[in-house]
Image (cartoon, rainbow, N blue to C red; front, side, top):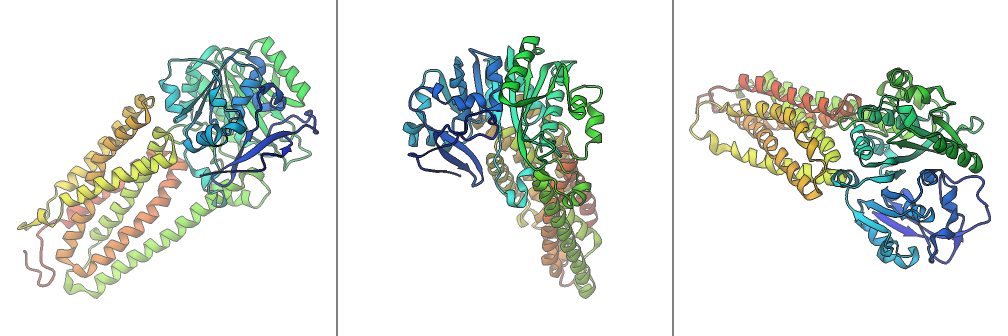
Length: 572
């Protein structure tokens, strides 16, 4: 959801988190604010003709790469209100391609407010693309001199801290390898994030991510390929609560002495600080994170999680280890407060769900004691229903997280995964409906064998299948995701009606209790899946779900046997 607000007839100081303190405070520009998801803001800037008039963009630390690469082919990831596109035009760059996943934003800046923004889309040197950035870039044969990512995120649900637990497909080692592969020989990947002096976790993690991506690309001396420049607002220990901006530049080839001299000259003139390059070490942690021999040690020594995110653990914004949340919550830790809130909400919910699940188990035990004449509820019954509840939700959420990275957008991932799993699970439930039991004296055990076999095969094959298909266009990736999910949805859908019909025939009074136990276990599993994914990885959450189905299969074998009528105990 987007909202554009402001007075188009009023000029105001230029918007920019990374503006130099040397920029003349008296200058004004026309601009409107673009609010995304209610809290993440960017800006639409009025352009009357000549982009050169917007010289404030030359004073922004996020645009440092434009000083180093002139007459460049530029790729902007996340067009937003068009600010990075204007930056490229201000520096006279040759060509700009701007990718934006949100069609409503492109509609706003190029049509609804096109006259205000100068119709950037009509300029011959500018091209807007409505697509998911990572897959679009992977499909291109073209190389760029600058690939720019400036604050690519939104802060939906920050009140609960939920955004830090969301997957982000652009901040993983695999994604950055794709970006590096699409740089020209002189190309630079420029990424800007927040910098907080007391705990600069985002910047530290950004450097660790850059180092890991360079190492996996076969570069043995990653520091020679990286430059980090930051605003002094976030670097001054005299103002520890001030949030600044850091811009990390990563080059295909080592930065030349001319590049480094130019960077230092620009930084000095604009009041920025070079925090890291091949010859500059002012932060021991940054130095350690940029060297292959000390990377692991620096990550281990950090009070926060600054390990490089991967597609299996794509939680760039989650930096608070579970065991440190309470300790950090007692101090002023600035921009990790959302992390702390998310962890505390997750752990608190897990405790509540665990208590309710235990209450469900107690209810099942009570039914067993109160209705012995009804055949009772055996331990294997309770284990079976709890295990399939845990297993289903663990598999579902792990695939939601994995395929969100594959599909490139959380909303798309949610819709596709839920649609595919719920529809196919319904088909599986229908396949083992009561008609499958007609005239049978024993429970069909085929589902107990099929379910774990299909899930294990799915887990082994899926990562290898989706990795080379990341470059396909979105409709094809949706089709592939549905095709992958349908088989496991069908087999997982078989388990619940199989067990429910078996218990209904033997102990009908226990049916609602076991149903409730299954639901409680699902709630517990949804929180457990998040806990496992952010702590260990998405694959670990999936294999935990597979293990739950193996437990369910073992319990189901104990449940199976002659099917009796609960009223008299006689076989039917």
